Each structure stands twice: as C-alpha cells, then as structure tokens.
Amino acid sequence: MKKLPQNLQLKLETREKSSALRVLPKESDRIDFQSNDYLGFAQNPKIQRLARKLVKEHTAVKNGATGSRLLSGNHNLYPVVEEQIAAFHQTPKALLYNSGYNANIGFFSCIPQRGDVVFYDELIHASIRDGLLMNYAKNYSFKHNNLEDLQEKIARVQQEKVRNIFVVTESVFSMDGDSPDLVAFADFCTQTNSYLIVDEAHALGVFGIRGRGLVDELGIQDQVFAQIVTFGKALGCHGAAILCSEDVYDYLVNFSRSLIYTTGLPPEAIATIGAAYYTLENPKKDTARKDLLKNILHFNAEKKRLSLDQFSTKSNSAIHCCIVPGNEKVKSVAVILKSYGYEVKPILSPTVPEGKERLRFCLHSTNTFQEITEALEVVINCI
Image 1 (spheres, rainbow, N blue to C red):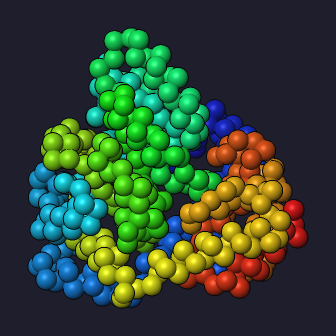
Image 2: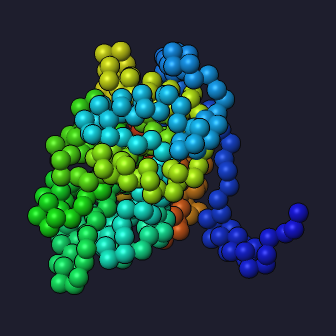
C-alpha cells in the first residue's frame, strides 16, 4: 500500500510532539471509571437474555438488516421498539438511527434550510457540528451555557430577514458533566418562537422519571422541537433515536440522508435497545439507576472532603472532571491511577483547550464507595 502523503505525515508528527497522538487502546480489566456504561447495562445478563427472547418472539432471526430501512431493512422489530421508546418518553414519535453520530448528522444536515439561522453552544458535540456543516443555514455559536449571550445574538439576527431560528444545546455536556438552565432556555425559545433541540445522550437513564432524561425531569418537553437520545451510554448498547412530532418524523424519513442511505441495524441490536428500555421501565427488577445516583452523591462528598473542588468541575451527572493542566502531567496521573488498578481517561488538548486538560471520571452503578474514595485519594496525592 502507498504511504501517507507528506503533508499528512507532518500533521501526525506534530501531534506526537505535543503528546496528543491518539492510539486505539486495548480492553482493560481495571476498575472502570472511563466507559459510558453508567448503569452497567452492557454487562447485564438479564438484558442479554431478554434481547434474545425478543428476537425469537418477533421471528427476526437474521444476521443483518439486509438493506436500508426504506428497502428491505425495516424488519418488524423496528416499529415495535420505536413505539416502545416513544411511549416511554411520552412523545408522539421516535425514529431510530444507527448511532448518535448518524442521528445528529441526519437531523442537522436536513432540518435547517437556506434562510434559517442555527445557534449552538460553543461546546456542542462534534457530531452536531459536522451535521451543521452540511446544511445551507447560517450557523453561529454562543458562549457555553450562556443564555444572555444567546439572547443578544438572536436579537441581532431578528433585525434581519430570517425564516426560522434553531437553538441547539445538550442537557448534560460530555466533557464536564455540566448542564445549561434548560427551563430558561426553553422559555426564551418559546417567547421568540425559536426551535429548541436538546441532545440528551448523557442524561438518558440518569435523570428524569425512570431515566427519561433532563427535559422530562424539568417538565419542558412541550417546549422542545426535538430530542436526541443515544443508547451507547447508559443503555449499554448501540444506536440512537430522535424524539419528535409525527410531521418531523415523516420529514426525516424522506430527507435525512444518514437514515435513507445506510443499512439498518440488525435485529439483535434493536432487540437489545428494547430490552434496555424494558429494564428502565421496570426499576423494581433492577436497582442500577438508584445505585448510580448514590455513587454520584458519594463522589461529590468525597471531592469536597479531599479539597478537590478547587481542581474540579461542578456536576450532578455521571461525568466528573479534575483539571490537571498539561498533556504530559495529566497522562502521568492517569498512568499512576492505572498502577493502582483504576482506568480513568486523560483528556488532552486539542480535544480540550490547552491548560484545561483533565481526568474525566465516568461513574457507574457498579462502582463501590471504596473504589471512588481510593481513586480520588490517588489523584489528590498527585496534583
């Protein structure tokens, strides 16, 4: 095979010199503080058994979907699980996608049109940014979680000829685990007749009644245009769904290219989503969410006790960060944590701004109080 062009090779070398070169890691058997499997569903044997049962019940025993959903791939588990998701979230419709990335690409590339304006949080996920690059609307960022900055920017564009205004944010941000004042954002969007879109990737399974998300917990669903929920985090499986009205559902089926031009998910994947939702629906049969919330409270209490607050971001979610400036420094602390048996992800620049490198702790229902305390004691002794 031909080698990489020289200009691209130089980019790799630059990244290596700044200690920011990415490599694919091997699976680890250390205590998990880095995966998104917040509820331990990815390793839950009950969910695995239920998924297999669903496949057999719906005579969907196939290795693959066999085609796109608009061709042969819309097997009979799709409508069953979409109806289950919509009922759980109390929304008119839920449209399944192959991943959160596909959902965001598909939505933001086709919904905003020429003459529209999109305002997005400056720390919004890369998948949303990529989707926005594919539309013909004007796209502008606003300061992180800063409603006042958004208000000023929308006031400016309202003086121009604008067709529709879309506002995009996340209910829980993936780097710091922080949240915007969603009630205030929703009220402002209602007042200005703007369309609010909320990515709930890191809120599903954690917040709201039975884990429906932060939009549900705050009671603002009627003010939201669309929600994106993804299943590779707390649900421990794969795929995503857009929660929306019936007309938005129909529009996406007709114009969302990442849905139209890709092979559907295999029956086993859809069944696993259904099994994970069944587990959320029946909390008496699984205490995972309750255990996770206890661990979040314990983490915050221990952070305060150890005086780690000054180095940490404020979060009531499953994601917590300790700021350790410098790629070399944060990587060295992560290595020390590994030597104690803890797997904690160091987040390097340029993924985060230089000087804001951090250790990203992801908490799980399966972590113990002792593991949390010991890991934080290692950190405080290193910084």
